[in-house]
Length: 422
Image 1 (cartoon, rainbow, N blue to C red):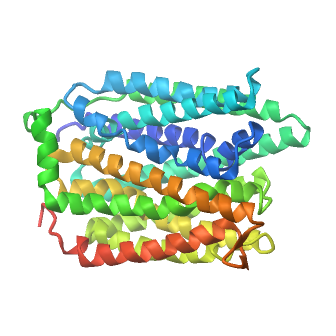
Image 2: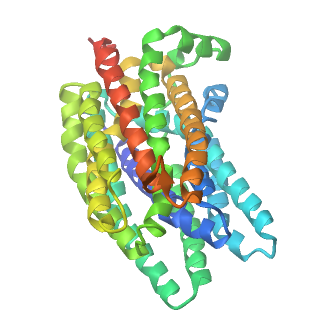
Image 3: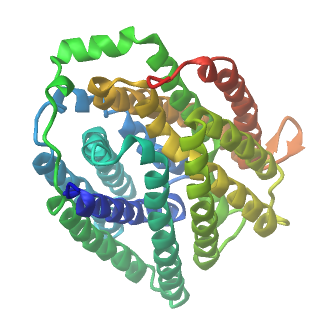
């Protein structure tokens, strides 16, 4: 029996994803809202900044220009060090002796550059590691990878939330920022180690295509474009509402960081519990069928959040978060695996990059378009069309309506496309 020389690298990939996830926790959601509140950023702008992760995805097309620069291990590792250093420096901004406007500019530059660089290396890195996984086991493997990230993230988030609450209770917000910044830097070192000790499979000749031809082939593949449109439309739905939930938890709903961390813990447990069953379902039937189930669950989640207010916040937002966890157990892995289902091997890096680019820009500009509505509702005393509602309730309704449209597209167009192996 031939020895599996990539077994250790697959294990390191699982750890790599976990460390990267821990860093994303500290530069998003309620943690990001803490920093933006400290430097005087409005809720609508915080929503836009939260969507920077989507805007960063818009730069994944750069990966097509450097996809043939093999091996990818060296430059991917180096660029990851740079982007994660920028993320660590975010927590230094509140300490700078600058005006409020200057602090905001520094914060925006660091956050945006961090996400841009992170996404430039995303597709080549994913292709590097996913090439080490058996195609017939991708569903279970990605589910296992997510489970480790989520369970680890649960413990990490709960611990960080408790530490931050302790510092804030003592009136030492600066201490909390120092802990977060040092944590990001330490995680960067661990993440870098997983990359450096992983092996890279030698590239196959058929994977290498001239740049002009590779880009042209992507746009000629109509079925592939239909698959990519799923991710684009999902980002439109998602970024209509979710970027504004971070400040909603901290401000209007008044959650403590410990409660936010408890929600994250519940999210991790539930998403972990459903990841492998959904992965097995996708391996047996298809990722498109799995996605249909997950989108229906997400539709219910948005409807629940449309009725979430301070008086019922802890109960309703928890219900939303539980449903969100179940849905995301399948949605995240499906975004990548649909490409592997329908794209030829030589198109995969380019297809992943194109998907993330179009979806990234769609998500960011959706948030940019919705932000004025959020500001308008808040500036008018949480009133919209004569009704007393919070902005986050309104955007949840809009997201639910858009998701109905996405479900129709998935079932009438995408599920009728035949996979490469059919």
